[in-house]
Every structure is written in C-alpha cells, then in structure tokens.
Image (cartoon, rainbow, N blue to C red; front, side):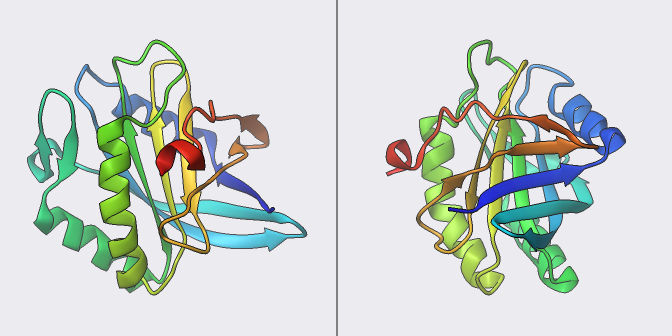
Length: 171
C-alpha cells in the first residue's frame, strides 16, 4: 500500500487551523491539490484554499452541509484547474481523539462518488479537525473505499492523524 501525505507551508496550515477553530461552529474549507509520486509515496500539495462562508452552508446543531450552489461552484473550480479536491471541516467541540461522525460518514458516502464522477476519477481527501488533533481519509482508486493518510507535512514536520476512522467503520 502506498503512503499518502498532504504537504503545505506553515502559513497555510496556520490560516487553515485559525479559520477552522475560530469559534464553536463547524467550519468548512476546500483545497485544490496537485499530486506527485516518489517510490511508494503519494504527495498531495495544496495549490489553493477556499474558506467556505457560513452563507454557503446548511448548518444544524449536529451537522454542516454545503449548499447545492456552493457544491457546484467548488467542483467546477477543481475541474477548471484540473486538480484534486480535499475538504476539511472542524469539530470545535472535540476534546478526545478526533474522528468523523456518523453524519460525516453518511455525507462522504453520498458526496465522494459524485465528486469522483464529476472530476473524472481524481483522488479526493477529507479531514476533520478537533481542538488538538485531526483525522483524515483519502479515496485514491475507488470512490467507495477510503484509505488513511500518513499525515500532513508542514515544512518537513509530520503531523500524524488520529486514525480513529478506518475503512472498516466507514462501511
């Protein structure tokens, strides 16, 4: 199995974390990613960031979902640039090891195959950030079977995910 990494600069990582944990509401960000390979490693590098404004989200007390118009805009953005897409959202209330919630998993099961089809089989990454850590999944070869990532490389420093959400509890 290939090891998967997300690469970014410290300033980008800091702005993402600051946006995600700005208050007690779930926040959402989308990333455009380029991809490179090195032996048995896959590196995704952040090329652009879209901080989703609250007006583009349908939020409830237990979930957040992108409005249809915003979804179409983000998919078109990735298509126009010819890049892969990643989503990040926050669980600002998470004090234990962060993981995707049941509603997150249900949303990914619906959204990832759609994006996969629209972007002609490009990989998709999803991450959820809590107060102290994060979890992450990637869909490389199949839009219904996720795999875990090794971590985020911030200027050479590896930040490892909790790996609380595995492909077995994604089923």
